[in-house]
Image (cartoon, rainbow, N blue to C red; front, side, top):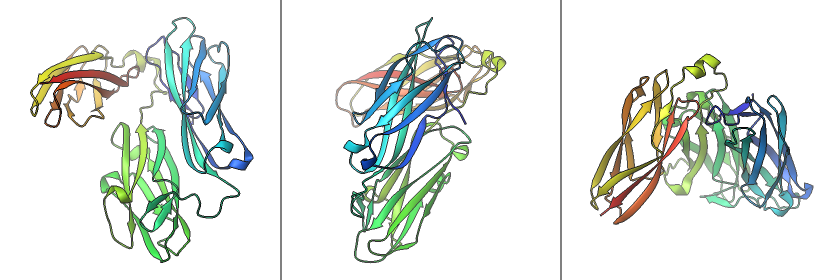
Length: 355
């Protein structure tokens, strides 16, 4: 199934990738570089060019289709993982791609990802379990599932080994609220030096929260459940909306989010709280639904209207908790996820002063 990244305006480039997160599976250092070719199609009305392809680290190189790509034509971006120079273990890499429209000169950015397990044919058994949780050695304590749409499923796993001299019972605990993450342990009991695997399957259809999020999974040894970071595994993913099947009429009647890019919240005394309500307007036709408002800053909380009718305004209330903040100026990002297909994720920069 094709993965579609949606442009931010009618003049911006729109391309469709055959996939945006590739799994290399198991590869070996001795086999040299691993290459995957991402194929995309120009779905827009204007010719485009790929103006920048930037790997997230020096262990990745890239190549791509040069020159103009007309509407309906395809192009490719090659991701090359320099396996020979890397240490064995799980890898998860990204490539930032910028595409420019030939006429409007607007750009759209995309993120391609690839992951896998790098092994060495000469490595001794058990040499690739650097993370220790009690009696277990794990290859990693986190998994990156990338972007998921409603209806998508993703599966991955973490291999482990019993690095102790005793037999142990192994299980996993997941909060019932995160039941859409199906988990399984390959064996209930592992003997010394015996290996196993934690398997995870993420059901995007059952996820209820939009945007980036993580699920905490805890390793339970010998029936002792300890909900601490020492025993935690983390599953990261990003729930995104799929606008690829929208008709022309649906796009014409879609809601349109109108909100300031920057907002000054004002001043707040140290140890106090500050509330500020700023307007959000729907200049489109159908109701604007605010699916989620979030920030990575723990001092910010929000109260939002569920929907805003055509031509109407609503108020998004931001509350700053300055109880643990020192005097000074602060700038933070908040993110609005809504059903405006052109601005489904809007970042707003907010600032305030603690006196």
